[in-house]
Image (cartoon, rainbow, N blue to C red; front, top):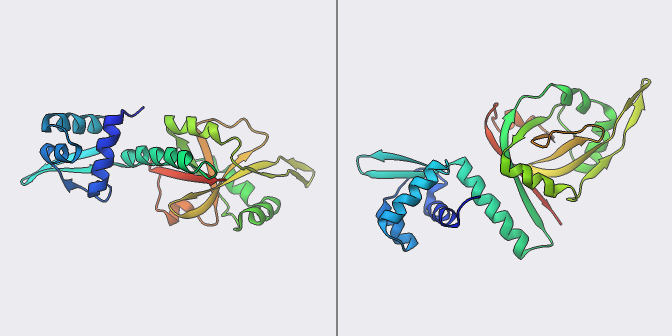
Length: 222
């Protein structure tokens, strides 16, 4: 849980441009923006750095501060909460985590004509033969639990070549503007901290992703 004072300071740094890169920021200038003393502002910066929400560096002309990906994720979660408060008919969720390697099973299943046809029909794109595997952070595991009734689309199972393939469910989402969907096999007890995402392109190449990169998945539904 992020302390309210830390979140306020993080928001102020972001509004000053800290999400776009390092900005010059002294404890006195931050204190002036927040209406607090320079000493208190310095403690806020130390707390944000300890939580890895910002990074600080010293240069000849003073201190520079930038909001990290973790800091952006904290702000996005706060934003999603406000969306749910002021626009309850349209809910927005953000799942954050790191890219990991899968076992390669997604490539096989996404190449089967039955799945390709149904996913394309419901999602509007033919899925790339493969999935992007994401390990969720602790906060996002709790957010994921709120998605059970978020408008999942069921895909029926089928039989081919004397083999039965189970059904699946998918939830439309977006990653950095790319339309995609979370996919879960209906027969598998899926780990709560892992999600698989499909898209009409190879997300790793298009978004220049490698293992351990942090990433956010945005889900919006009515």
